[in-house]
Image 1 (cartoon, rainbow, N blue to C red):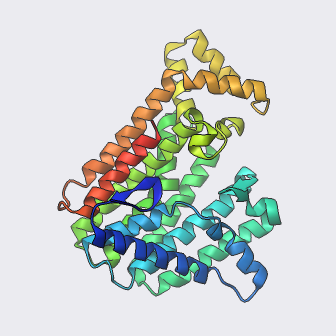
Image 2 (image 1 turned 90 degrees about the vertical axis):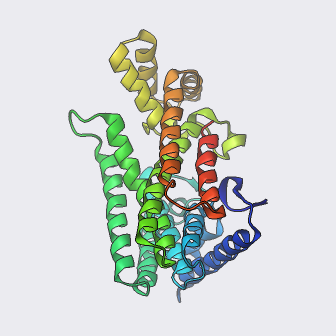
Image 3 (image 1 turned 120 degrees about the vertical axis):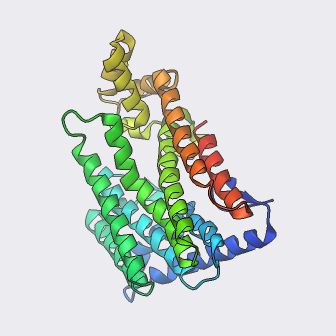
Length: 336
């Protein structure tokens, strides 16, 4: 077994390993080529996050999904470049909205060059992704456009918050389906579609990607509370400090409203206070780590990962399917 891609994914078949590694190498070259500009400053800004690295989770899914057709088909690698460019573009915009200072261990684009440059660089990446898409045909353009609409809708819904009477947890899961699930689903869809896989296979892999994407983000929610910086590579409780209500917090508030326990209400009040104060932040983290709401969020993560695994059932048994199943296990493992 050889380690490939994020989470230490290992593949048992040497031919599959070679295909995936070759595909990811070609994607990396494609990303650098797609982010070049005649203006050196634009090239530097556009390649800032490309060169910072990343899991390349979405291109990996393109490569694995392409194994159910012709993995060497000409559209496979370009479609993987498209989904990763789209993902990178959203990171530039997210960092502006969140006023983030660091991304992937380097200064964020907005911290380095200001908000205007960061937003315009994200737009530049979207434009380059669209240029590549145009060569992949009208169906690819339609699929990407629908996914992008869902992604932006998810972001708007997150910003607007749930409507009166809407369950905040249901609202949040809808947000994640748009913000994260949509592009992960397209990664699987493009891999299968570009490889010429049967339409039923394309649909199965799209459903798998949607659920895996949500599970992936929910695992991040749990990690933000449960992990230490050594395990996760980032500062614990970042979302808490920024006042972002992720699933563990939403599960806590749901429980407090349902049971009315004094300790739950007190913890909610602590979370609503100024958590830029280090002592309050540390206390909030300590209490949340011991709270049943965190375990509930873990169970939610497992549920989505299991739904992703179940979606793969109609596919024939093969090493590519085994690798996709292993990604479900890896997401659950990340959440503890």
